[in-house]
Image 1 (cartoon, rainbow, N blue to C red):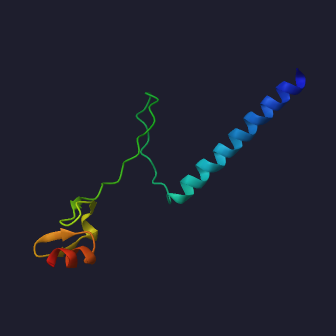
Image 2 (cartoon, one colour; image 1 turned 90 degrees about the horizontal axis):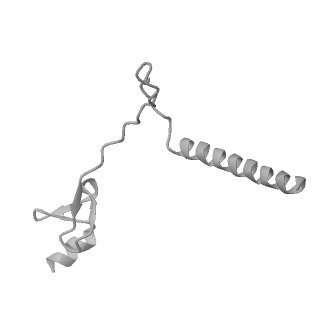
Image 3 (tube, rainbow, N blue to C red; image 1 turned 90 degrees about the vertical axis):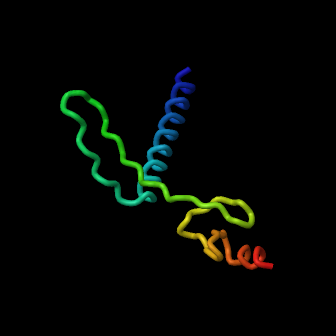
Length: 91
């Protein structure tokens, strides 16, 4: 029975260590975190993170796929996802 409890405790510790390392790696990959605003005094609520604004999406006139507007290839007043689709549409 003691061995079983030992192995269960060991597995729990390993899982906790792996999760901690993964969280740290994800936080590092996301870049420097902005300092969150302090929580309101006395209510114990955790501060919320502000989400980045999303980029506007547009639809390709040839294939219909949606993509970020900043990546659009514009021709003839229409938006395309690639120069190849501009050439295919003008044929």
